[in-house]
Length: 179
Image: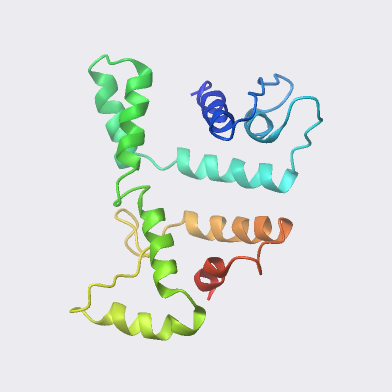
């Protein structure tokens, strides 16, 4: 687990053509991850405390999510004695599925289809029509049938981050989601 932030940051830096930033042992886990992701060589990077606290909450809420599909997949692969990196790869592959982490992409696609807050009532009618193929994505959870208890924490955290980054008015998809 300790190597994952370094591997993720290195992959990200490589994908955007920037040099890799080495870990800084004076930083905590989340600060170090943000530092490796967003610092550039020769400049002092200051981790935004609101972003750090938000990411800490996200890490904790997701780490404490018990036996989801990707966790089970990693454990099953690991029980065969497979290489740890291969096991993590199986978890990532499972996370990719639309009934797990891939559901986030389905929400983005749904928001793009809705395209504007003015069309929300039309899409609510479509969602209620059992003969219409349109489905509301991002509502409900296989384990939490009534309400995902993490949602309240994530909702408030999201508001804090968006306010800090001044992104509340700049993203039309976000406006549809908030509506």
